[in-house]
View: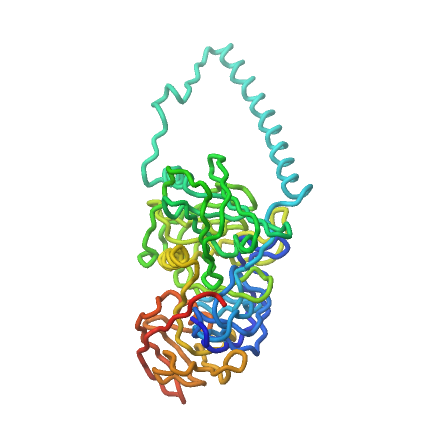
Length: 483
């Protein structure tokens, strides 16, 4: 979307963007996202940069220039402003304010007393009740046996072991769980949080969200724990704020790592079954199920800490995703990774002992095809590479398209001289309505779509100028790094 000179975007003031699954405890996944409506965002930067400052975004930060208005193409100054306060997710994919996925985040772990302590108390109470019921039931059976001579049959003698077919959720979970990890990140200041990741290759690389490890990027502590209980120290190999993807590497990685099989997110269909694995509210190795409820959902999010935003054309699922699920795999029915769980839409505060909001059935995952490309770049060079068109677009929450602003970020040119948009003849005031066959209803939507492509890809841009629709083909440029 936006890259160096991508232009500026003006952030919208949507209703409430999605929040990072691992946002700070004090802020729910959808942290308030109030956008500074006047700042333009760059559409050229890796995606789009929002220069406006939406209050609180959802899950991650966007690298590259800041988009100008409703959607910014990759181009403007970076970093973009946070997403607007509340985005709407309509059928058409309402525009979302620019926001960051959350470079830093607070741990979602429950608080003492009413948090984890409350859970323990509840579990204890349940155990006592179950014990009472079991005791009573056992007494009744024993009495009946004495009186009637009735005989009970145990599972071991009633047909053998339970068989689980390869396609069952239990079978998929049994195969995938050993290759997932619970990540704990702690900054120099002692703040930290919990997220999830999964084994990417046999060399010890783990893929997760940028907002999960952001706090440990500059000298913090990072550990990854497998379901077996084995814990490893790890280091950040590379992170991309705009994509909200990061790669960490285990120190002294074991030789028997089994990478999860990567699927093809382009072939996913609405209605397909999904399985999510993560550590919601610190409860490691949790498995939930659902379906793909929508595709290509434009999402701009951040952790609500302020400046950076992440944009994606997400897979939407109703599988239960909560704080702590961030960075975990979203699997298909065969156990192939089709996405990285990253953000949720929530109705408000009030989580499970943490003050955070929980799942309402609207979770968003980064498509694995995009995440794989980003991860490979991070492993290879340590820096993300973003596609850009070289124009600043407005980030305002509209449904009419992504308008190229009259002024770029920081007083720069709204259309980068010599950039892709300039070569294609695009000018300030033009409203981009389609990218290839994808309808563009806002700046953030444009940014998310541009970032699903790679630099050098040729795309067809449909835009309106003076009430007349025009079409032009352009080759996407590139921007390296988040700054």
